Every structure is written in C-alpha cells, then in structure tokens.
Length: 148
Image (cartoon, rainbow, N blue to C red; front, side):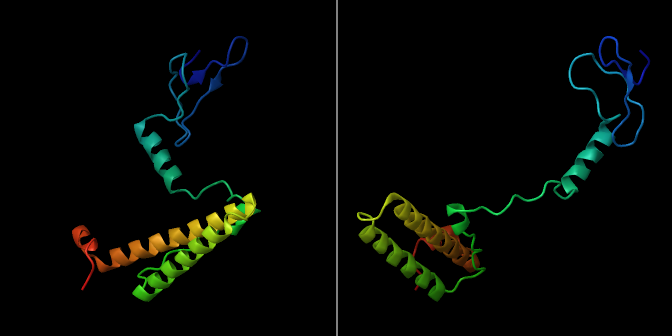
C-alpha cells in the first residue's frame, strides 16, 4: 500500500483518500477507527465553521395535524402594558373557573383540550409578566415588592 491510499479489505483495490476540504492526499492512518477526512487541523476547523454557518440542509417538517395543530405559538409582547397583563390574567382565571365547573361532566378528550388551552394561556401570561418585569429593568429583589 502506498501513502495516501487506504485498503478496502482483502482482495479489493486500495482507494486513494484526499482531504474533503482542500483535496490534498491524506496519509494512511491506523488500521482501526474512523478514516481521516481532513489533511490537518486547519482544514478540519474550516470545514466545521462552514457547516455551522451553512443553512440547514433538511426541509422543515410539515405542519402538525389534529390536536397538536390547535396549539399555536403566540409570541409575547415586547413590553406588555399593565392593562394587557391584567386582561390576560382575567381571561386565564375565567377559563380556569370554567374548566373546574365543566371537568366532572366532560369526557377525557374534551377535558384534555380545555387543559391544553388553559396551559397555552398560562404560558402567554407568564411570558407577558416576564416581559413586563424585564422591560422595567428593576433589580430582582424589588420585583417581589409591589410598586407604589
């Protein structure tokens, strides 16, 4: 076997291996383990950086159907007003009371659907409260105390 070639097994021709980035011939490595793909550290790091910066090769998965399609991501407001947070909290409270009232008579699928809707609203409320707190830029200890 000559330098820059790899043995493909008994009775097969050796294959010449080259660097995946620059095309330089690769030295023959050990007989065990994964064969080398790059001639050196510089080519390996350059290829890694290119992979990181490249757009994703795989297409995005299709939109979900059924129950999963009913949950939509609602981006949080950048700086929600006190009124919008209060309105969202009232809506969550009303849906929670409605869920408690209807839960004993609802079937499993309907109950699960209502719980998922309530969870979605709670996620929105949490995001709004956090956005409001981050928008105020108050120190953490002051967030626990009500503002005058």
